[in-house]
Amino acid sequence: MALIGRLVVIFIGFLASCLVGGMIVVGALLFPEFSDLGAGPIDEGTIDILLGFGFIFVSGFALVPAMVIVAVTEALYIRSVLAYAVGGGLVGLACYLGLVPFHPETMQFEGIVRRHLEIMTGAGIVAGVVYWLIAGRNAGAWRHPSPPRKPPPPLPSQSRPDGR
Image 1: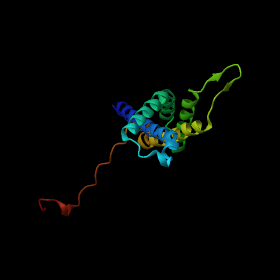
Image 2 (image 1 turned 90 degrees about the horizontal axis):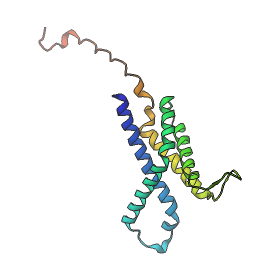
Image 3 (image 1 turned 30 degrees about the horizontal axis):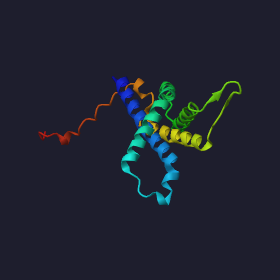
């Protein structure tokens, strides 16, 4: 039963981290548009749609690499925030490099935009920290049952309700 509860917490942590990562990606990619003073107000419906697509994009591409990081941290009881930040950065890097064409003849990625690489890696780092806040702090705790509680100490003799 503890494993099922842990899987639910992992799933909720993954969804929350993907939402935050998607928000960072959409916000950072649209920042030049936000900074244009002549653009006027931005439609909230458009932002909602973009955030939804950002969430779908990040969660779809990050699922497999993130589950590898989660499996490793759960198996090895890794609870360090630094480990989750580095793992999130690697997941963001893997998601970006998965979209860039790779030429096996030259063994190089072609068309890497440094700003986009930094945005995806940064979003992965923040998403890793969000995952740690929700699920990573208790990684591997489902394996060990909680220790039995000690019985409470006896009451003093003068505190009995019947007055004896």
